[in-house]
Amino acid sequence: MEKDLSTTDKMTKRSEGSRSNRPFSILMPGKKVYSECFPEYRMTDEELKDLQDCLLGIFLDFKKICDENDIHYMMGAGTLLGTIRHKGFIPWDDDVDVMMTRADYLKFTRTLQDMQHAGKFSDLLLAEPLKSEEYYFKIPKLYKKDTDYYQITYMGNPRYNMASIDIFIIEYMPESNLMRAIISLRFNLAFYASSF
Image (cartoon, rainbow, N blue to C red; front, side, top):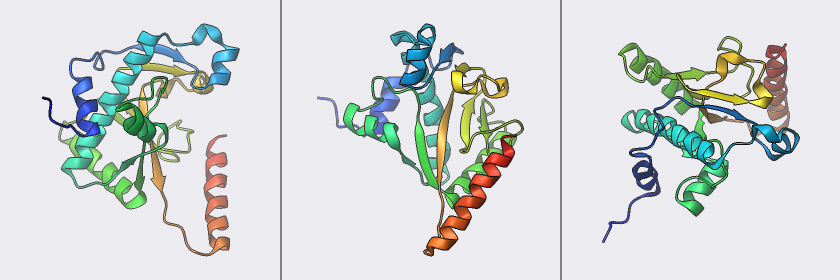
Protein backbone atom coordinates (compact mmCIF):
# COMPACT_ATOMS: atom_id res chain seq x y z
CA MET A 1 0.00 0.00 0.00
CA GLU A 2 1.40 3.40 -1.01
CA LYS A 3 1.95 5.78 1.88
CA ASP A 4 -0.09 8.98 1.92
CA LEU A 5 2.02 11.60 0.18
CA SER A 6 1.56 15.33 0.55
CA THR A 7 0.20 17.10 -2.51
CA THR A 8 3.62 18.58 -3.25
CA ASP A 9 5.18 15.10 -3.02
CA LYS A 10 2.57 13.81 -5.46
CA MET A 11 3.36 16.67 -7.85
CA THR A 12 7.09 15.95 -7.47
CA LYS A 13 6.53 12.26 -8.15
CA ARG A 14 4.52 13.14 -11.28
CA SER A 15 7.37 15.27 -12.59
CA GLU A 16 9.99 12.54 -12.34
CA GLY A 17 10.84 11.42 -15.82
CA SER A 18 8.90 14.27 -17.39
CA ARG A 19 10.08 16.18 -20.41
CA SER A 20 10.23 19.44 -18.43
CA ASN A 21 13.96 19.96 -19.06
CA ARG A 22 13.51 20.00 -22.83
CA PRO A 23 13.01 23.36 -24.51
CA PHE A 24 9.65 23.64 -26.21
CA SER A 25 7.89 26.21 -28.27
CA ILE A 26 4.24 27.02 -27.87
CA LEU A 27 2.28 29.95 -29.18
CA MET A 28 -0.02 30.29 -26.22
CA PRO A 29 -3.04 32.58 -26.16
CA GLY A 30 -3.60 32.28 -22.43
CA LYS A 31 -7.31 32.90 -22.06
CA LYS A 32 -10.47 31.70 -23.77
CA VAL A 33 -11.14 34.93 -25.68
CA TYR A 34 -7.78 34.64 -27.44
CA SER A 35 -8.44 31.00 -28.30
CA GLU A 36 -11.71 31.99 -29.90
CA CYS A 37 -10.15 34.86 -31.86
CA PHE A 38 -7.01 32.94 -32.81
CA PRO A 39 -8.01 29.25 -33.06
CA GLU A 40 -4.83 28.44 -34.99
CA TYR A 41 -2.83 29.09 -31.80
CA ARG A 42 -4.68 26.70 -29.50
CA MET A 43 -2.43 24.23 -27.70
CA THR A 44 -2.84 20.52 -28.16
CA ASP A 45 -3.22 18.33 -25.08
CA GLU A 46 0.39 17.20 -25.50
CA GLU A 47 1.66 20.79 -25.71
CA LEU A 48 -0.30 21.71 -22.59
CA LYS A 49 1.15 18.69 -20.76
CA ASP A 50 4.68 19.72 -21.83
CA LEU A 51 4.01 23.26 -20.57
CA GLN A 52 2.64 21.97 -17.26
CA ASP A 53 5.70 19.73 -16.82
CA CYS A 54 7.99 22.69 -17.46
CA LEU A 55 6.04 24.92 -15.05
CA LEU A 56 6.20 22.20 -12.43
CA GLY A 57 9.98 22.07 -12.86
CA ILE A 58 10.24 25.84 -12.32
CA PHE A 59 7.97 25.59 -9.28
CA LEU A 60 10.05 22.77 -7.79
CA ASP A 61 13.23 24.87 -8.19
CA PHE A 62 11.41 27.80 -6.54
CA LYS A 63 10.20 25.49 -3.74
CA LYS A 64 13.69 24.09 -3.15
CA ILE A 65 15.17 27.59 -2.82
CA CYS A 66 12.41 28.62 -0.41
CA ASP A 67 12.43 25.44 1.68
CA GLU A 68 16.22 25.41 2.11
CA ASN A 69 16.29 29.07 3.16
CA ASP A 70 13.23 29.38 5.42
CA ILE A 71 11.35 31.53 2.91
CA HIS A 72 7.59 31.31 3.26
CA TYR A 73 5.24 31.21 0.29
CA MET A 74 1.85 29.83 -0.64
CA MET A 75 0.13 28.74 -3.79
CA GLY A 76 -2.63 30.96 -5.10
CA ALA A 77 -5.54 31.09 -7.55
CA GLY A 78 -5.89 28.13 -9.93
CA THR A 79 -2.62 26.62 -8.70
CA LEU A 80 -4.03 26.26 -5.20
CA LEU A 81 -7.36 24.98 -6.52
CA GLY A 82 -5.63 22.43 -8.75
CA THR A 83 -3.39 21.25 -5.93
CA ILE A 84 -6.37 20.62 -3.65
CA ARG A 85 -9.03 19.45 -6.10
CA HIS A 86 -6.95 17.71 -8.80
CA LYS A 87 -3.82 16.78 -6.82
CA GLY A 88 -1.78 18.67 -9.42
CA PHE A 89 -2.80 21.00 -12.21
CA ILE A 90 -6.33 21.88 -13.17
CA PRO A 91 -6.44 19.92 -16.46
CA TRP A 92 -6.69 23.08 -18.61
CA ASP A 93 -4.46 25.35 -16.47
CA ASP A 94 -1.53 27.02 -18.18
CA ASP A 95 0.22 28.85 -15.35
CA VAL A 96 1.50 28.62 -11.77
CA ASP A 97 0.76 31.33 -9.21
CA VAL A 98 2.64 31.67 -5.93
CA MET A 99 2.24 34.33 -3.26
CA MET A 100 4.60 35.66 -0.60
CA THR A 101 4.95 38.65 1.68
CA ARG A 102 7.23 41.51 0.66
CA ALA A 103 9.77 40.48 3.32
CA ASP A 104 9.89 36.89 2.05
CA TYR A 105 10.07 38.11 -1.56
CA LEU A 106 13.07 40.32 -0.76
CA LYS A 107 14.73 37.40 1.01
CA PHE A 108 13.99 35.20 -2.03
CA THR A 109 15.57 37.70 -4.46
CA ARG A 110 18.73 37.99 -2.33
CA THR A 111 18.95 34.22 -1.89
CA LEU A 112 18.46 33.50 -5.59
CA GLN A 113 21.10 36.07 -6.49
CA ASP A 114 23.58 34.57 -4.01
CA MET A 115 22.88 31.04 -5.27
CA GLN A 116 23.32 32.11 -8.89
CA HIS A 117 26.64 33.77 -8.05
CA ALA A 118 27.64 30.39 -6.59
CA GLY A 119 26.70 28.67 -9.87
CA LYS A 120 23.33 27.25 -8.81
CA PHE A 121 20.00 27.78 -10.57
CA SER A 122 21.70 29.58 -13.46
CA ASP A 123 18.85 28.41 -15.71
CA LEU A 124 16.40 30.71 -13.88
CA LEU A 125 15.78 34.39 -14.54
CA LEU A 126 13.85 36.60 -12.12
CA ALA A 127 12.22 39.56 -13.86
CA GLU A 128 10.87 42.38 -11.72
CA PRO A 129 8.68 45.42 -12.45
CA LEU A 130 10.64 48.68 -12.69
CA LYS A 131 13.95 46.82 -12.27
CA SER A 132 14.37 44.43 -15.19
CA GLU A 133 15.13 45.84 -18.62
CA GLU A 134 12.14 45.93 -21.00
CA TYR A 135 9.93 44.22 -18.42
CA TYR A 136 6.41 45.64 -18.41
CA PHE A 137 4.41 43.32 -16.19
CA LYS A 138 2.97 44.36 -12.82
CA ILE A 139 4.20 41.25 -11.03
CA PRO A 140 7.56 39.49 -10.84
CA LYS A 141 7.96 36.28 -12.81
CA LEU A 142 10.51 33.51 -12.46
CA TYR A 143 11.52 32.40 -15.97
CA LYS A 144 13.20 29.21 -17.15
CA LYS A 145 15.92 30.01 -19.67
CA ASP A 146 16.21 27.85 -22.80
CA THR A 147 12.45 27.52 -23.13
CA ASP A 148 10.36 29.18 -25.80
CA TYR A 149 6.91 30.28 -24.73
CA TYR A 150 4.89 32.90 -26.58
CA GLN A 151 1.72 34.56 -25.39
CA ILE A 152 -0.30 36.61 -27.85
CA THR A 153 -0.80 39.35 -25.27
CA TYR A 154 2.98 39.79 -24.89
CA MET A 155 4.16 39.18 -28.46
CA GLY A 156 5.85 42.60 -28.71
CA ASN A 157 8.49 41.74 -26.14
CA PRO A 158 10.69 38.83 -27.29
CA ARG A 159 13.10 39.19 -24.35
CA TYR A 160 10.67 37.32 -22.08
CA ASN A 161 9.37 34.61 -24.42
CA MET A 162 10.11 31.88 -21.86
CA ALA A 163 8.03 29.69 -19.58
CA SER A 164 7.56 31.28 -16.15
CA ILE A 165 5.70 31.17 -12.87
CA ASP A 166 3.96 34.25 -11.48
CA ILE A 167 4.93 35.65 -8.08
CA PHE A 168 2.31 37.78 -6.34
CA ILE A 169 3.64 39.92 -3.51
CA ILE A 170 1.40 40.38 -0.50
CA GLU A 171 2.00 43.97 0.52
CA TYR A 172 1.69 45.36 4.01
CA MET A 173 -1.01 48.02 3.93
CA PRO A 174 -1.88 50.68 6.50
CA GLU A 175 -5.27 50.64 8.18
CA SER A 176 -6.14 54.08 6.86
CA ASN A 177 -8.25 53.96 3.68
CA LEU A 178 -6.68 57.21 2.52
CA MET A 179 -3.15 55.83 2.88
CA ARG A 180 -4.19 52.65 1.04
CA ALA A 181 -5.58 54.76 -1.81
CA ILE A 182 -2.35 56.80 -1.99
CA ILE A 183 -0.18 53.66 -2.09
CA SER A 184 -2.41 52.09 -4.77
CA LEU A 185 -2.29 55.26 -6.85
CA ARG A 186 1.50 55.42 -6.55
CA PHE A 187 1.83 51.77 -7.62
CA ASN A 188 -0.49 52.20 -10.62
CA LEU A 189 1.25 55.42 -11.73
CA ALA A 190 4.64 53.70 -11.55
CA PHE A 191 3.31 50.79 -13.58
CA TYR A 192 1.77 52.96 -16.28
CA ALA A 193 4.84 55.19 -16.44
CA SER A 194 7.05 52.15 -16.99
CA SER A 195 4.82 50.92 -19.81
CA PHE A 196 5.68 53.75 -22.20
